[in-house]
View 1 (cartoon, protein in one colour):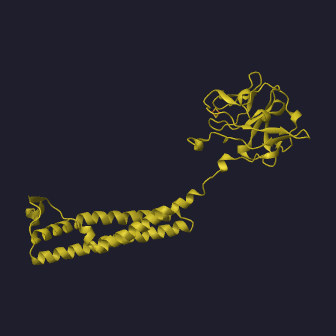
View 2 (cartoon, protein in one colour; view 1 turned 45 degrees about the horizontal axis):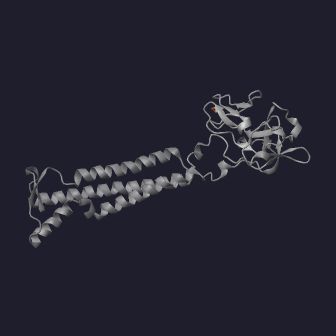
View 3 (cartoon, helix red, strand yellow; view 1 turned 120 degrees about the vertical axis):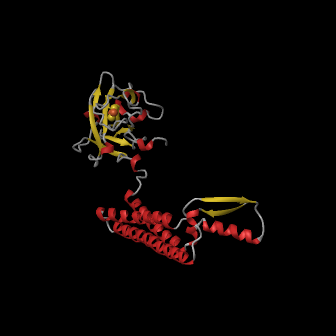
Length: 302
Ligand code: FES
């Protein structure tokens, strides 16, 4: 089936002078549209340069507006001036036919894709699109480097001394049964992710899982102080029930069961820090926390 376009009465074939005027109008429209796309390319290029050189919010906003305005004007103007207007009727006749009919079909197709025929427009639009895409890709730089394994590690290391907030080394006898002490790795008393609570229970009371029996010498237990619910400091210890309490939303963690949550919204145990007692009686870590500390939203699904 071949298709033929029959112009509406208002689009009746113009005479030669009218046709020349129409061609001239289209040429001028084409130049205006190409100019708008080139404006987009220019503004987007300057935008990329301004961003690259440190950025200037006002200039960046103005240039972005200019680039998008050029693009918008170009498309609207193209639709208004260069696309065929009016209503058309299509007569259908069997496909195939002679050479003349086939050429007619090719003409019809070309007429329905006016953008593709106008090299100036396609090139200027391509330039604008590439410049705009380049300008939009630059802010990716602002995201900075990925955190990598940083969020899974703390300054705790094997053999590092356990110190209090003043940096004083903690002796195994400094923490009586029922007491709580906030401790840090030596040299890192300002590391928020390393803050740890140290408690002591009667020896043999805690029920560590296989492989963790040596983590709590003389009943000393150390857990991350950062609540696994929303990151508040778990700073209260109820010795009678052996529970660490988070004041923010009342989560409770049983230190005899590796700080499993027993009440409240926290769903994950406080990570336990493995401890050892040196020959001098000072407490040391025998490694880092095995699990990420804190709420670890970023770790969900791993
Ligand atoms: S932050 Fe601890 S219970 Fe919500």
